[in-house]
Image (cartoon, rainbow, N blue to C red):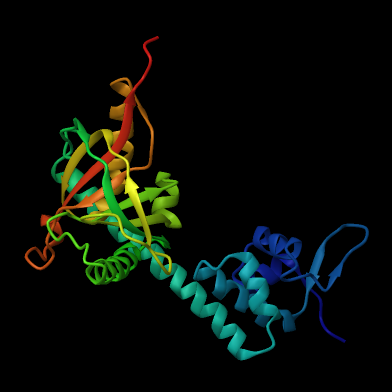
Length: 279
């Protein structure tokens, strides 16, 4: 016969709070072995301490409760390893995002007005024949996704005899929202201006990128700092009576063969706009 341990004593034994034990019971992770029908008081056994320790360890590494449930239910060690590897990658990605945020914050501390005093120009641009590839880039993988697409586009344009090296490539950010851009990534259209329209194939689309009125900002610095430029430019556009008519375009002005320091990267953000109606 096993010995019943009151929830208060079990909490001390496992270094878990009573509140946490109640939550784990409600989530189906660690149920009391007996609940007094009259008092509602909960009891555990010493054998459950090992399970409690496992839950506590997984919570210490900030694993979500739903995934903890899957780990506890897993009977295959490889399945447990898969969950742990997945969570390890999630923490790694979060740390990378936090590091970028720290770098941005450091620049703001050094120059508080650096991202609030940029120069916006309103200008007209012409229609441009374009080869493009659409892809989804997860947060932290923008550079890799863009470089891969640019390589495919340049190879195809050269094969078609339409490559225009003097025209800088660009990236169109579809369905942009600041939170999604930072946390889960976004849909990208990687574009390469070409000399003339050509046929597309295998996901490469040949189109005419429409010109018109755009709000333009030239940003000097790492590409991830554009996360601040976008919302600030949106505010400027609205404040000056314009309406956005399309997704933002990032024109890559930097020759990476010559500029290797991200602090020297130059990007022109172009956002299609029209003048709003008065009143």
